[in-house]
Every structure is written in structure tokens, then in C-alpha cells.
Image (tube, rainbow, N blue to C red; front, side):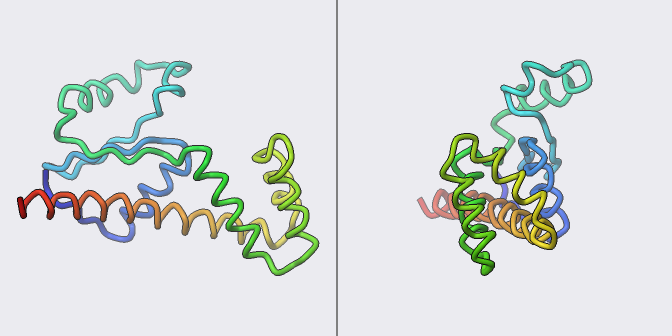
Length: 151
């Protein structure tokens, strides 16, 4: 496996696709990136348009480094961290209450969608988190390679 090196624009693109629910498969030899739906979403999708990419990743699995989309625990953590960053006490209380009730994702989204200027702040916060997530995954891969080379 090769060390992964990407530009800021490429990292933003990977983060954006993860945020949209895709899984990122990076060919470590060619640096080609394939975005696919996760396995659960694939069950409901028309596989014809995805099949060539699925076959490529499956047939050459050892050449690919995969960055999964955030799981629900990580997604919840982003909402929690955003709520904690809010200085408006009323909105902070609403978001905190939403996160502690049934259907926290739905409740949080409704409050954010109706929060005026904070809506864009949420999107910016979430995007920065995803970019950091991608960089962390790439760094972990590269550190693992460095350790392997030392052995």
C-alpha cells in the first residue's frame, strides 16, 4: 500500500461524499477514488449503475483503503459538539433537549432548519468535522504504513 496524499480540495470532496452518505474506496496504487453506497443502502438501490465500481472494489479489495461514512454514534457526537458551541442559551436548551428525546436526529434537524443564522453555522460546523474525520483516517493509514515499514 502506498502513502495517501491528497489536496485540500480532494479531502473536501471525500468529506462531502461521506456527508452525503457514500463510502469512499481509495485505490492506494492509482489513487483513484470510487464512491459507493454502503451495504444497507445498496440493498434498495438499482445496482446496474453501480455494478462496475462494485466489481472493481471487490475484485481488487487488497488495493483499496476504505473510509466509511460516520456511524450514528459519531453523527450524534457532531450534533452534541455543535450544541455545546452555541452561545445562544435558548437555542442551546432547545438543541440539548432535542438530543435527549426520542428521535434526536429528526428533532435536531427540525430545530436547526428553523434557527435562522445558526442553520448555516451548523452546515459549516458539520463540514469541518467531516474534513477532520477524513484527515484522521488518512493519517491513521499513513502512520500504519510507517509502522509496517519499520518492522
